[in-house]
Every structure is written in structure tokens, then in C-alpha cells.
Amino acid sequence: MAQKRVQVILITGLSGAGKSSVAKCLEDLGYYCLDNLPVTLLRDLLEAPREHIPAADRIAVVTDARTPGLAETLPELLAGVDRAAIDPFVLFLDTSDEVLLRRYSETRRRHPLAPSGLVSEGIQRERQALEDVRALADKVMNTSEWTIHEIRRQIDQEFGDRRADQAGLTVNLISFGFKRGIPPGSDLLFDVRYLPNPYFVPELRLLSGLDREIVEFLRSKPEFGELEERLFKLLEFLLPNFSRELRSYLTIGIGCTGGRHRSVAMAEALASRLAAANWNVRISHRDVIRHEQTDASPVGETVTAPDTDRR
Figure (spheres, rainbow, N blue to C red):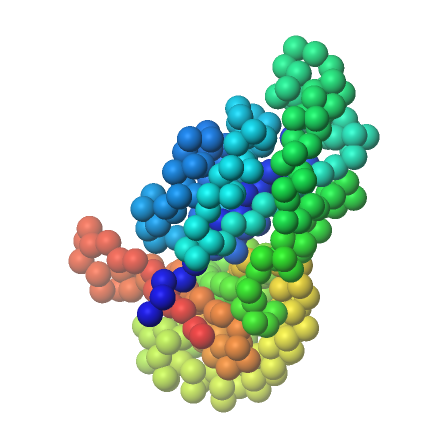
């Protein structure tokens, strides 16, 4: 069986046009990203990428006017690429002088080609230095009017391989107890403390929302089923919209008082329904393990909170 060709994207263009942002977007798409390789190392990479990065079949390299000899050497490097083994793609990022001047003014950085002079002089020198490189580009993107979100959208459309909206978004569901604080990094929070609490049923107190007895208790209460349905319908509406914004993940916290019964059962119920709807779901129960350590774990024993994938 023939080995798959290695895709190598050379990200080049004007300083301040968004090369670092593009590299981050490609990294999120699974590319192995390198920044500012010298020409000699770039040559080695293009000659035998699998020797240098064996596990990667998609590589992105930022290379620009900071790299001495790039304009003179790039045509030769591309001409010598073994196209049967490597699929090279030159992406050139351009931006208007006005926008570049504004960006440099906002960041207060010096231009790499005019470290002690005017930014405008550096921009013109760079345009001239990269004129031949631009002519070699497979695609030129003008980022003058693009926000970081638009850059991400354009890169995803050009280089992403999603089969559906769901493929790019991972939904992280975390159950927790409010008395131990809200999980950091939560994008959405749902409070389920108004549901009937199994804690006050003596024979259920030491169980968790992962146990059948707790689930049966909660499902016997109409409030639980109604809330599950309403939350699922809300997520059915929200998730495709978040996905279209090209988010990699969304973290949803579901909290009750102690994080042992109600929040756990609700997180499990939603995870099952979202997985059945073909969303990528990860679920963790932050505070169940705290109870287990308190109730049964030997002193000094370290236990890792459960964290599972749902497909």
C-alpha cells in the first residue's frame, strides 16, 4: 500500500498579516506547526519530512522575510520537491499598508526590516523582498478586513476536513458541587439544585448519580425529565451555532449542592442524548470522587476523577 503524501503548507507573507494566527488555526486542525525555519532546515524538511517528523502527515511552516535567502532559494526548493511523497502548498498572506501601520501602532512593535527606522519603510522593503515569493503562492489571502474569527473560518474552509458541523466541536460536560466552587473555564452553567435531593433519603445518601437507584429516584420526579428535555432542546439550538464559529470545544458545567447526585445524573442523561445526536462528548464528574475519598478511600490515597469520551 502506497504511503500517504505529506502535506506541507508554507505560510509566508507580510509581517503583521496574521501568519501566527493562521499557524494556530492549522494547529487546531491537526497540523504540526513550525515557525521561522532557516533555509537549510527548510530544505531538509522538504527533502524528507517523515525523517524529521515521523508521526506527522500534515505540517505547516511559517517562513518569511526574517529568513535570510528565502526569496532566492524557495523556487529551487519547490522545484526539487518529490511530489509523489510530498504535497507542498504556499500560502501568502497580504494586507494593505494602512492596516499594517495600524496594527504596528496598536502593538507598538518594531518592523523586522526597519528595527531602528519607520514602520512604513520596513513594510515597503518587505513587499519588495517577498515579491517573487508572492508570485509562487498557490493562494494569496488578503487579511485586511478579517478578524481572528474570519481568519479561522477561512482557514477551516480551505484546509479543514470536517464531514459535518459536529466533527470539529467537543462538548465537555462537567458535573460539580456549588459548595466546592464553579469549574474554571466553564462556558455555560446550569443549576439543578431545585430538583429533589436524594441526599435526604438515608438509603441513597452514599450512592451517586452513576448508580441505578439514584437515576430511578430522580426519574420518578417529573421535574427531572422536564429539565432534561428543556436543556437538551437548548443545546440542540446552541451547539450548531457554536460549531459554526469554529470553536474546538465547549465546556458545560452542571451543578448541584455537593456534586454527587443530581448534577451527575443530569450530566449523564445529557451526554447520552448528545452522543446519540452525533456530537463528540467528554464527561467528567469532578466532585463524585471527593465523596468517595471521604467515604471510603484510605488516608493518603490519590484518586483521579472519572473522565470519559462519548461518541
